Length: 293
Image (cartoon, rainbow, N blue to C red; front, side, top):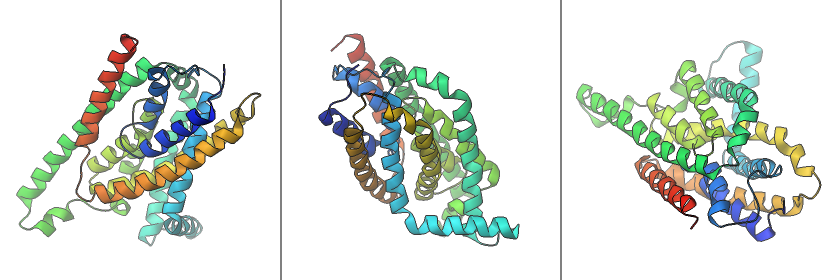
């Protein structure tokens, strides 16, 4: 198989970086787009998954830069709490919540790796999961609106209503584990990592902005871990490492801009627009693939 050209690699880097943190599945787009554009490169190529992981490393680097001061505090808080044997601050609690949330995705990823990789070669599967992802986003918001309705009935003021939905540091460890386990669904091309974790955070009682923040923090160690596992595949013969690294840098820049936008958007925005987009894009992709347009 011919590797991606420089232009194609940069295009994929920009696409992945711009869409990774949006709840629209960058992986689904990465599997579908080459087929829609009739590229000679095939998703079944052995270098495809390592290439995608390298792009994700660009995203993880962007998140580390965005939350650099917070990650320093989280790492310090983790070791402080571990040595002391007790959590005394919100930062220490957040560090332990992130640890609990990371374990399920890591374990499931190891056991499901071979089966999941086989799905990367099928744009039809990715388009189908993209539609399913859209319905998930709409479902999360329906459940959230019901919770908001109950909070409104039980509250007398706006401040009391907002008190029903807290920050990432306040959720339970069981909720963190469930939200972390939701990340495993993101191994399926078409299911958005940020979408399912933000949705899980909403169900756990987080504000939209806090659900996005927890999602971004939770994604960072999982993406970095996956990168270390897949990195050797990039050094196989014939893989243009230089072009792929340039694409990863572009992905990181796009991811940084996307994260800044989404944190502002979720101060008042919801998942609904992205749900409708995924349903429309998935159905349109299935039609285009079926008719070979």
